Image 1 (cartoon, rainbow, N blue to C red):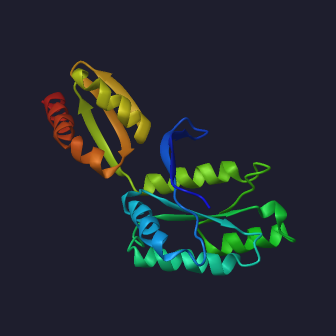
Image 2 (image 1 turned 135 degrees about the horizontal axis):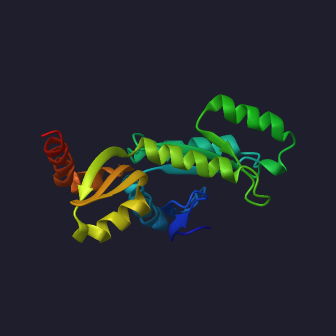
Length: 199
């Protein structure tokens, strides 16, 4: 039985960090007294930027387990959150190549082996792309006294370009929506600076 735990700011191979939360495992015939507690834990999923559904693809009942998880996700009304399916233990199936081809056909599915490390680079790349899709493109001019915000954006966002100007730090980046909203006043500063330059 697995319980909720957090590993703050896991680092990807490209240096970017993200918060990874592991929810409870899905257990058949869960005692009634525990159902409410587990459901409360699962409801935290609604705050996620990306759902990563890890499946033991070597398990004989893998498909039934996938369907059980999808049913619960539907009940929790989180189908709008981007999802990535990860088939783990691909090294333990009879025909790994066949399983990998099936994953390619199904789309948004990555095959890995947590034991051997196979496919982990593909997994990190897929997480990177999925998170990027859930972010907003911004150009903002941060005043020099907003150094903490700039540092946070480098951690949670995907900064494409940083330029230091006499008025502050100009950034071009993909950031989570809530940070895009925080940066909204500073996005106007970029427009004002551009107008002054043209004038």
